[in-house]
Image (cartoon, rainbow, N blue to C red; front, side):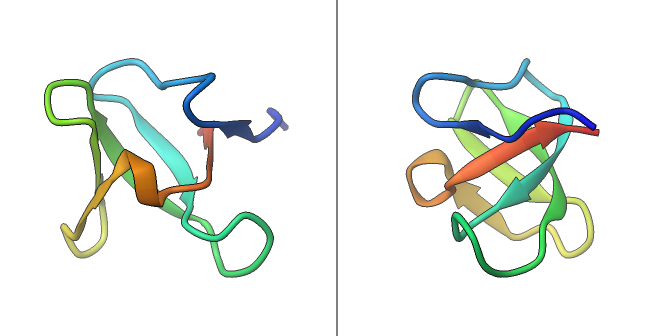
Length: 61
């Protein structure tokens, strides 16, 4: 399994679906699509958009 990556040191490739965590340690990870144009993640399940600054970690599927 790939290691979790943090911001702003690491950013996913544009239009990639990744596992995303809002809280660094707690809470479930969920799948979201990254947009380089708007610097946001959009949840695959419910289409909620999260700006990069409020997300703590991500990793590739």
